[in-house]
Length: 196
Image (cartoon, rainbow, N blue to C red; front, side):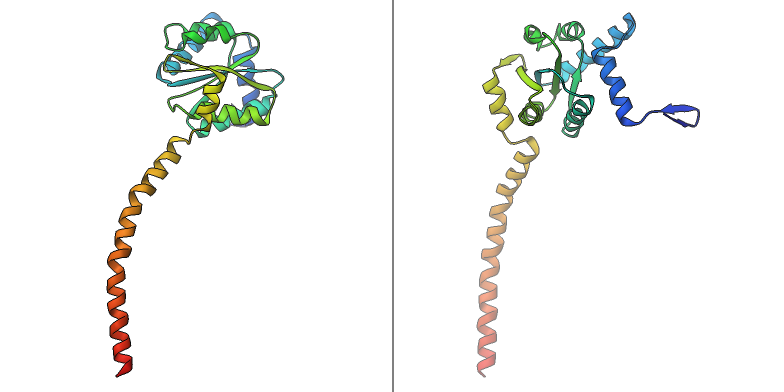
Protein backbone atom coordinates (compact mmCIF):
# COMPACT_ATOMS: atom_id res chain seq x y z
CA UNK A 1 0.00 0.00 0.00
CA UNK A 2 1.10 3.50 -0.71
CA UNK A 3 0.19 6.65 1.15
CA UNK A 4 -0.94 9.38 -1.16
CA UNK A 5 -1.96 12.70 0.37
CA UNK A 6 -3.48 11.07 3.43
CA UNK A 7 -5.40 8.55 1.34
CA UNK A 8 -4.41 4.95 0.93
CA UNK A 9 -4.09 3.81 -2.67
CA UNK A 10 -3.73 0.19 -3.59
CA UNK A 11 -1.90 -1.44 -6.49
CA UNK A 12 -4.32 -2.69 -9.15
CA UNK A 13 -3.68 -6.36 -8.31
CA UNK A 14 -4.59 -5.83 -4.66
CA UNK A 15 -7.61 -3.73 -5.65
CA UNK A 16 -8.74 -6.55 -7.99
CA UNK A 17 -8.35 -9.11 -5.21
CA UNK A 18 -10.38 -6.99 -2.81
CA UNK A 19 -13.05 -6.50 -5.47
CA UNK A 20 -13.06 -10.25 -6.10
CA UNK A 21 -13.51 -10.99 -2.39
CA UNK A 22 -16.14 -8.27 -2.07
CA UNK A 23 -18.28 -9.73 -4.87
CA UNK A 24 -17.56 -13.39 -4.33
CA UNK A 25 -16.77 -14.19 -0.76
CA UNK A 26 -16.46 -11.08 1.35
CA UNK A 27 -18.61 -10.19 4.32
CA UNK A 28 -21.10 -7.46 3.57
CA UNK A 29 -23.65 -5.89 5.84
CA UNK A 30 -27.29 -5.67 4.77
CA UNK A 31 -27.10 -2.10 3.40
CA UNK A 32 -24.00 -2.92 1.34
CA UNK A 33 -25.77 -5.95 -0.13
CA UNK A 34 -28.86 -3.88 -0.95
CA UNK A 35 -26.67 -1.23 -2.58
CA UNK A 36 -24.82 -3.87 -4.61
CA UNK A 37 -28.09 -5.47 -5.77
CA UNK A 38 -29.53 -2.07 -6.74
CA UNK A 39 -26.42 -1.12 -8.72
CA UNK A 40 -26.36 -4.45 -10.54
CA UNK A 41 -30.09 -4.29 -11.24
CA UNK A 42 -29.73 -0.78 -12.72
CA UNK A 43 -26.90 -2.02 -14.95
CA UNK A 44 -28.91 -5.04 -16.06
CA UNK A 45 -31.92 -2.88 -16.95
CA UNK A 46 -29.70 -0.98 -19.42
CA UNK A 47 -28.04 -4.12 -20.81
CA UNK A 48 -29.09 -5.85 -24.01
CA UNK A 49 -27.19 -9.11 -23.50
CA UNK A 50 -26.18 -11.10 -20.42
CA UNK A 51 -23.88 -14.13 -20.52
CA UNK A 52 -23.72 -16.47 -17.50
CA UNK A 53 -20.57 -18.49 -16.90
CA UNK A 54 -19.28 -20.88 -14.28
CA UNK A 55 -15.76 -20.19 -13.19
CA UNK A 56 -14.04 -22.85 -11.18
CA UNK A 57 -10.43 -22.26 -10.28
CA UNK A 58 -10.11 -18.94 -12.11
CA UNK A 59 -7.34 -16.96 -10.42
CA UNK A 60 -7.68 -13.33 -9.44
CA UNK A 61 -5.23 -12.39 -12.22
CA UNK A 62 -7.25 -14.31 -14.82
CA UNK A 63 -10.48 -12.79 -13.57
CA UNK A 64 -8.92 -9.32 -13.70
CA UNK A 65 -7.68 -9.96 -17.24
CA UNK A 66 -11.20 -10.94 -18.35
CA UNK A 67 -12.70 -7.95 -16.55
CA UNK A 68 -10.24 -5.60 -18.30
CA UNK A 69 -11.04 -7.09 -21.71
CA UNK A 70 -14.73 -6.56 -21.02
CA UNK A 71 -14.14 -2.96 -19.93
CA UNK A 72 -12.25 -2.21 -23.16
CA UNK A 73 -15.41 -3.15 -25.08
CA UNK A 74 -17.80 -1.26 -22.77
CA UNK A 75 -18.99 -4.50 -21.20
CA UNK A 76 -18.88 -5.61 -17.57
CA UNK A 77 -17.88 -8.85 -15.89
CA UNK A 78 -19.02 -9.46 -12.33
CA UNK A 79 -18.40 -12.32 -9.96
CA UNK A 80 -21.17 -12.13 -7.43
CA UNK A 81 -22.85 -14.38 -4.91
CA UNK A 82 -25.70 -16.30 -6.51
CA UNK A 83 -28.24 -15.13 -3.96
CA UNK A 84 -27.43 -11.48 -4.68
CA UNK A 85 -27.42 -12.06 -8.43
CA UNK A 86 -30.88 -13.66 -8.24
CA UNK A 87 -32.18 -10.63 -6.35
CA UNK A 88 -30.70 -8.31 -8.97
CA UNK A 89 -32.25 -10.32 -11.83
CA UNK A 90 -35.78 -9.93 -10.39
CA UNK A 91 -37.80 -7.42 -12.33
CA UNK A 92 -35.44 -7.39 -15.32
CA UNK A 93 -35.79 -9.01 -18.72
CA UNK A 94 -33.04 -11.45 -17.70
CA UNK A 95 -34.97 -13.11 -14.87
CA UNK A 96 -35.16 -16.34 -16.93
CA UNK A 97 -31.45 -16.88 -16.25
CA UNK A 98 -32.05 -17.54 -12.55
CA UNK A 99 -31.84 -21.32 -12.97
CA UNK A 100 -28.21 -21.03 -14.18
CA UNK A 101 -26.90 -19.59 -10.91
CA UNK A 102 -25.51 -22.75 -9.33
CA UNK A 103 -21.94 -22.95 -8.09
CA UNK A 104 -19.29 -20.28 -8.68
CA UNK A 105 -21.03 -18.09 -11.22
CA UNK A 106 -20.16 -14.87 -13.01
CA UNK A 107 -22.07 -12.66 -15.41
CA UNK A 108 -20.96 -10.60 -18.37
CA UNK A 109 -23.30 -7.92 -19.68
CA UNK A 110 -23.38 -4.90 -21.95
CA UNK A 111 -25.57 -2.55 -23.91
CA UNK A 112 -23.71 -3.91 -26.95
CA UNK A 113 -25.41 -7.06 -28.14
CA UNK A 114 -22.23 -8.88 -29.20
CA UNK A 115 -19.39 -7.76 -26.90
CA UNK A 116 -20.04 -9.90 -23.80
CA UNK A 117 -20.58 -13.05 -25.86
CA UNK A 118 -17.55 -12.44 -28.05
CA UNK A 119 -15.15 -11.72 -25.19
CA UNK A 120 -16.43 -14.45 -22.86
CA UNK A 121 -16.39 -17.03 -25.65
CA UNK A 122 -12.84 -16.10 -26.70
CA UNK A 123 -11.64 -16.19 -23.09
CA UNK A 124 -13.34 -19.56 -22.45
CA UNK A 125 -11.58 -20.99 -25.52
CA UNK A 126 -8.20 -20.06 -24.03
CA UNK A 127 -9.07 -20.88 -20.42
CA UNK A 128 -11.07 -24.03 -19.62
CA UNK A 129 -11.72 -22.76 -16.07
CA UNK A 130 -14.45 -20.52 -17.51
CA UNK A 131 -17.49 -22.35 -18.87
CA UNK A 132 -20.33 -20.48 -20.53
CA UNK A 133 -23.61 -21.98 -19.35
CA UNK A 134 -26.18 -19.70 -20.94
CA UNK A 135 -27.28 -16.24 -21.80
CA UNK A 136 -30.12 -13.95 -22.68
CA UNK A 137 -30.69 -11.18 -25.18
CA UNK A 138 -33.53 -8.73 -24.49
CA UNK A 139 -35.53 -11.33 -22.57
CA UNK A 140 -34.94 -14.19 -25.02
CA UNK A 141 -32.93 -17.03 -23.53
CA UNK A 142 -29.96 -18.06 -25.67
CA UNK A 143 -28.64 -21.58 -26.17
CA UNK A 144 -24.90 -22.24 -26.17
CA UNK A 145 -25.03 -22.55 -29.96
CA UNK A 146 -26.75 -19.17 -30.26
CA UNK A 147 -24.15 -17.62 -27.95
CA UNK A 148 -21.38 -19.07 -30.13
CA UNK A 149 -23.07 -17.67 -33.25
CA UNK A 150 -23.39 -14.30 -31.54
CA UNK A 151 -19.70 -14.43 -30.59
CA UNK A 152 -18.75 -15.10 -34.20
CA UNK A 153 -20.57 -12.02 -35.50
CA UNK A 154 -18.47 -8.94 -36.24
CA UNK A 155 -18.51 -6.27 -33.55
CA UNK A 156 -20.38 -2.99 -33.97
CA UNK A 157 -17.12 -1.17 -34.76
CA UNK A 158 -16.19 -3.79 -37.38
CA UNK A 159 -19.63 -3.44 -38.98
CA UNK A 160 -19.33 0.34 -39.04
CA UNK A 161 -15.94 0.05 -40.75
CA UNK A 162 -17.36 -2.29 -43.39
CA UNK A 163 -20.30 0.02 -44.06
CA UNK A 164 -18.01 3.03 -44.40
CA UNK A 165 -15.81 1.02 -46.77
CA UNK A 166 -18.81 0.04 -48.88
CA UNK A 167 -20.17 3.59 -48.97
CA UNK A 168 -16.82 5.19 -49.78
CA UNK A 169 -15.95 2.65 -52.49
CA UNK A 170 -18.31 4.05 -55.18
CA UNK A 171 -17.09 7.60 -54.54
CA UNK A 172 -13.48 6.46 -54.92
CA UNK A 173 -14.32 4.61 -58.16
CA UNK A 174 -16.08 7.68 -59.59
CA UNK A 175 -13.09 9.87 -58.72
CA UNK A 176 -10.76 7.43 -60.51
CA UNK A 177 -13.00 7.38 -63.61
CA UNK A 178 -13.24 11.16 -63.70
CA UNK A 179 -9.47 11.53 -63.30
CA UNK A 180 -8.62 8.95 -65.97
CA UNK A 181 -9.77 10.99 -69.05
CA UNK A 182 -7.95 14.09 -67.78
CA UNK A 183 -4.73 12.11 -67.41
CA UNK A 184 -5.18 10.55 -70.83
CA UNK A 185 -5.70 13.99 -72.45
CA UNK A 186 -2.62 15.32 -70.64
CA UNK A 187 -0.59 12.35 -71.92
CA UNK A 188 -1.78 13.01 -75.51
CA UNK A 189 -0.75 16.70 -75.27
CA UNK A 190 2.62 15.75 -73.78
CA UNK A 191 3.25 13.19 -76.53
CA UNK A 192 2.20 15.70 -79.19
CA UNK A 193 4.50 18.40 -77.78
CA UNK A 194 7.42 15.94 -77.60
CA UNK A 195 6.94 15.03 -81.29
CA UNK A 196 7.18 18.66 -82.39
